Image (cartoon, rainbow, N blue to C red; front, side, top):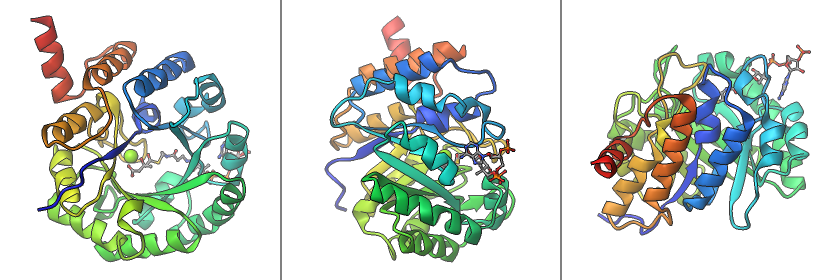
Length: 302
Ligand code: HMG
Ligand code: MG
């Protein structure tokens, strides 16, 4: 078994984590969260999304947040842009990477972005083209690669089909997302395998929600395939507004603990990361949704 020696983590907490919060989170708190994440050693942070404020009110402060963060050299700040309108708004805020987001399931595509998979690709194509012309990196998120809240189990062929479409329009790397956290290792491996028919290993990330508590097992299964890009959310924040009952991504704290314990380099300071998770959890008035953070915080208190 040969595992990667290092893992690059994108913390998606400020975006995927907070987008589902009902209570408005002040832009200043989002800015502070980003600062704390970069202080903890995160080199990729998904900051916000340029989507309809009617659909996702929590992300309506995208400009305020992007212009409020203190940008550091060597850190990649990414944002979601579903269409040209979103891209044009994002462009003014100079993201390092934009993310177009599609789904392997037709029903989820309709619920999430109000169009079919084919229509989504038509909308993404000019966004990808404009981003690349502007020297901005392009990532593609693929939702429901294992299961869909509306269609149930998703065949790997559907994932491969979407990955091929993403590749065809010039997306540089993709996220294999288990949106509702129903995956188990072999199913996740099949989704990754289907994606690897179209993208190089270095261009494929795991994005696992932890709804059924399988995200770490699925991460290990992905590592065993050599997948070394992973996404997680500080304090396990999150869920998707269009996937009822789905909880957050695997917490970054749990992921880092796993990787550190296996001798895999992440460049992240776990203690500072736990502080960042506690900070945003305090803002939200709850405890971090991370086993590792809970254990460490209990130990600190004792
Ligand atoms: P639509 O209604 O089909 O769009 O929405 P439209 O082009 O017909 O426009 C309708 C209205 O929206 C117009 O305003 C537009 O100006 C406005 P009105 O004239 O009614 O006042 N509009 C926009 N406003 C701001 N920014 C924009 C934008 N585009 C149109 N970019 C749309 C289509 C995609 C915009 C909508 O469906 C939407 O915003 N959906 C939200 C999707 C979303 O954010 N989902 C959560 C993120 S994805 C996710 O979490 C999954 C992921 O984590 C991976 C995983 O875990 O699976 C990535
Ligand atoms: Mg997600």
